[in-house]
Each structure stands twice: as C-alpha cells, then as structure tokens.
Image (cartoon, rainbow, N blue to C red; front, side, top):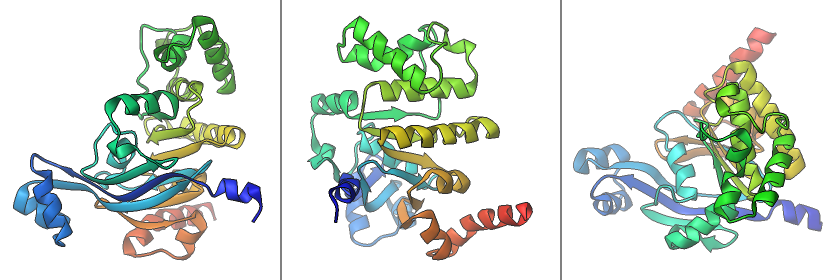
Length: 284
C-alpha cells in the first residue's frame, strides 16, 4: 500500500461505545441500557432519553463523512458530543488518538480554537460586526495580531467568493452569502476538522445546491476532515464519501452511497431510498 493511500485511510476521529442519555438520572438509565433494556423501556421506567445508543465508528483524515437521519435520530447530539458542547454519558471520542471526552475545559477550549470548527444551521453571525470582523473572530480569540488576522480573513473570504463584501454588515447579505461567511469563519482558523450541523437546510433549494457544490469544491482544494449532518438523502448522497444512517440513537447502516443503494440494510433504509428511486423515475 502506497504512502498516499495510507495517509488517506488514517483515522482522524474515532468514537468508541458512545452513549448520551438526557435526564436527571442518566447513570440509572445507563445501567438499564447495559442490561439490555430498550430505549422505550428506559423512557417509561426512568423518564430518561437515550439519545446516543452505543455508537462506534471511525472517520478518516480528509474524509467528508455524512451522518444522516430524521429528527430525533440523535445526529445533532452526536456532532455536539464530538466537540463537547454536549458531554457524553459514557464512551470515548478520540481525535488524533487523544480522548477528548475526558479532557478538562481548558484543553477543550484549545481544541475548539485550533483543531475543531463548527458551522451551524443558523448562521450565528454578529450583526454589529462587519463580514470581515465576523471571519476574524476565532483568530481574535486566539490572540492573533490585527494585521495578520485581517489578512487571513480577507484571504478566506476570497476562497469562498466574498472578497468584495468584507466591509459590509451581515444584514446586507443573502442567506447563501451569510452561510458562506459562516463557512469562512470556520476555515479561517485553519482547523483540521469541520463539524457541520445541517448548515444548508435553511436555504432555498437552488442556493442549497450551490452551497453543496461550493463545499465539494473547497474540500477538493483543502482536504479537511468534515463531519456533515443532514436529514436529506439527496444531499447526503451528493456530498458524502461515506454515510452513517441513524435511527433511535443507533447507526443502522454505514457505507458509501453505492453500497447503501445496492445493499440496503433494512426496511428503514429502503424507505429512505424510495425518494431516490422516485426522483429517478420522474427524471426518466
């Protein structure tokens, strides 16, 4: 195996037996879960919600990995566990071999500033700051000098096609442009990992497709490790190198788009795929 292939297959993020339970007695629910009780059983017995139900998976360095599922499947909880915005109840989250599920808040803050960036569905821009100042924000928090962070912000705005908009306020921008600013802010820190929680779902269909194309273009150039959350199978199949489909806090199938289409794991996956089949029928 060549060095190039080895590098491509290097594990960047690894989840081991990750569990997240919401409620005021999570460890009571955890004991029941480990005894084999179902998610519904645990909810009835304890009023605790098992959001992530023992997930283990690996995401390769430089991979655009999609987690797909309907509302309530646990996908957004999962992505927030990876940068510890939500603390898991049990399990391990390794990034470059470091178990970040058990680091202190100081170390986690360092990781968020240097290694992990997040792009949300809602743009989260500061309305009183210019586009450039929004992009600079992560660099400012890291203590980068004003001249250097301005240069980096401008270069990143150029990368996402907004080089002329640096001095404008976010209110001057369209929805798609605002999401480009959010993406530029994440990219400006040179973080190796991008966590994207349904970042395009609030956009109009045409703009959404343009942003998907833009993400694929940037990924081809930058080779980030991207974990992308989506509820849309068309979006997942378009951008994902591999896709994990979630239901009730579990991964019910993991594979490439081709593997999932050719070998659906169960009726739940087949129901998702029906939308793909129907689209093909309409298009002839």
